[in-house]
Image 1 (cartoon, one colour):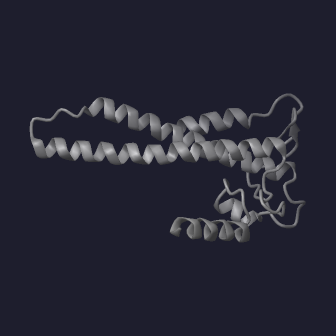
Image 2 (spheres, rainbow, N blue to C red):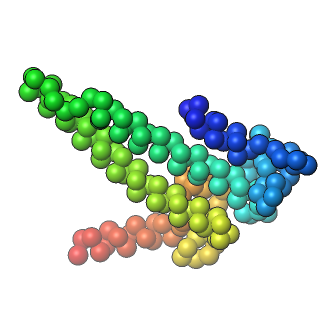
Image 3 (cartoon, helix red, strand yellow):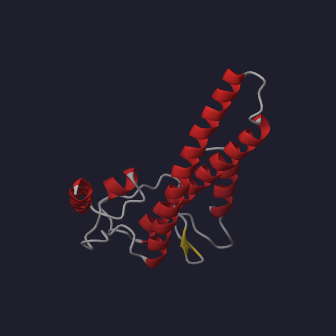
Length: 164
């Protein structure tokens, strides 16, 4: 995590007057440093929701920082090179960076959707079945909106309709 993200995170985690470590700050939960959701606690309690909110927010900030870096790099490099091979390489590299940023732009919209589900307290539950998605899946893929079974059914249906 870069320095600007650490500074942003430390501002979010700052403790106000009377705030307790691991308690509630305003209507936001303040997590202990070593907190990790586990199956021994109630599924999608306030601590778990805050854990995933912070994880998604930090991920989004990292993606936005990378987009800014790409913009700065493309502006600084410029595509004008006297040698045609050098120019082709620079253009190829720029194209790859832009495709990557486009995929990340789509990922940011999924992150925003997950953050909205957290605000609505529907995060962590399958959009098809309403069943819990599971902490392991959410830790690995915090933007998941379907359980493993529902995701498999969805992918099978996509494959069937794609072949038609």
